[in-house]
Image 1 (spheres, helix red, strand yellow):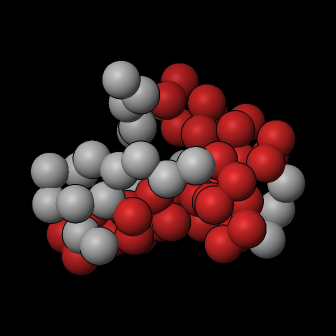
Image 2 (spheres, one colour):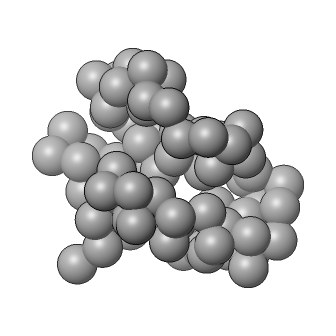
Length: 70
């Protein structure tokens, strides 16, 4: 867990509470370099939402330039 990234996530405006939760969960899974590899299903289970919703929120975070997928 990267506490630095968690703090930054809390400060970031993403426009949607579920999207914010997904971002925080990604940060919770990240190392200090900001890298994480959780499955969509893991995030969905932790955030209590569908896998498809997680995918949509992550794609919107990518479109906003907040998250990168490599």
